Image 1 (spheres, rainbow, N blue to C red):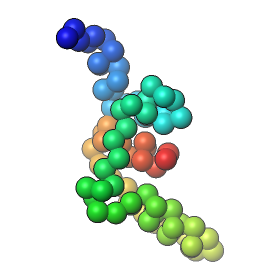
Image 2 (image 1 turned 180 degrees about the horizontal axis):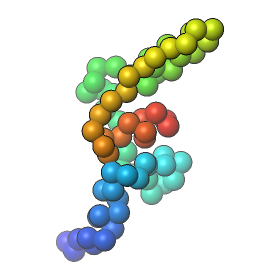
Image 3 (image 1 turned 90 degrees about the horizontal axis):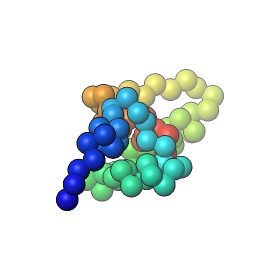
Length: 74
């Protein structure tokens, strides 16, 4: 198998957020909610939605390129 290093570098760029609306980016998304034991995005959405009259604060952390923005854009 021949590796296209230019393409490999582009798809592994931690500064680029995956756009899950694009078929090309969808192939790189892995749903880890089963491993986490819950769907954290659903829980965050519920907390924010049910607190519409009160400010909320959620801390969403991780190292650069781990998928924070990708998860939040889902």
